Image 1 (cartoon, protein in one colour):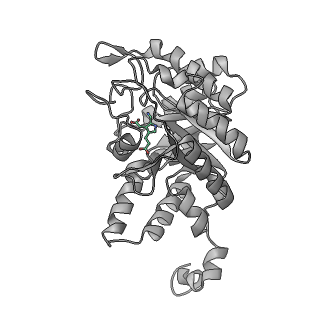
Image 2 (cartoon, helix red, strand yellow; image 1 turned 120 degrees about the vertical axis):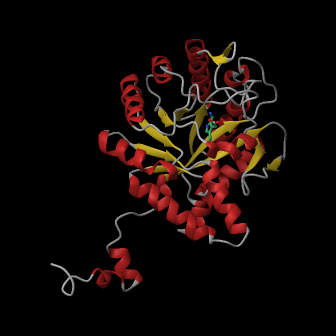
Amino acid sequence: MSFPVTRLRRLRRTDALRALVRETSLSLDDVVMPLFACPGEGVVRPVEGLPGIAQRSVDEVVREGAELARAGVRAVLLFGIPEEKDGEGSEAWNEDGIVQRALRALRAEVPGLTLLTDVCLCEYTDHGHCGVLDGDTVANDETLDLLARTAVSHVEGGAEAVCPSDMMDGRVGAIRAVLPETPIVSYAVKYASAFYGPFREVAESAPSFGDRRGYQMDPANIREALRECALDLEEGADVLMVKPALPYLDVIRSVRERFDCPVWAYQVSGEYAMVRAAAEAGHLDERAAALEALTAIKRAGAGTIVTYWAKDLAGWL
Ligand code: PBG
């Protein structure tokens, strides 16, 4: 049946009607807020490229965590900026390292908040790559044990799920072997993306030479993304994550259709920074653009989104 009998505008007339037929909705249950822990006390150091986001000392991480929990955000993803970096990234698995201390403080003082950690070495190595080097390349197998140790130290600190983001082959299996009970949220499909720029500023993790194309995925590939997912599930991943989100909606959709596990997406720093910059210049409405992007990522198939707007979302919903 077509026009004049069918008139799709009939259901668009009022807010209430639109809400009744809406196919996708956003909820605070489905967002995770990234937090960046740094040394010191009383430190809240804003980052130019990522307005509204800051490096925070452990006491300030706790203060922010408590605010997030009060606002209704249920989960945070912790990153660390260590005091010292070295070739191996050994601060990553130090039991008194920055993330481990932040975890213990949050666990004690904000018990309601679910704590996830990013497992990677790039914030901890003096060369900024995600694993140990062999000449100019990142040595895959030598890195696995270090990632597993890092994940164990996070769980001992109080992490409830670990999120490996390094893109070494076999890392999920290496972590699963030592942590049979811990949920693993695998950054299974992580592209070598230009949209991570502002993150590397806040995490102080830009590679000192070269780039990450030798381990992160080529943005041109989607079949390879599905192979990454299948392997990570076989190795024991519980959740598959696609990253970045908005430029990769087709990938999110394909992963959602192919696999029955939870699928998450990471709306990365560049996606956030672009909208913030355009909004600050007066060219668009931040709230409307953010809600539209988040809705699109959910519509594509992501159940949960890691997003720098998680806190704002609590006020918007
Ligand atoms: C660590 C890591 C990165 C991001 C999350 N975990 C950076 C990278 O791979 O260079 C990016 C997150 C963002 O841009 O918001 N490897």
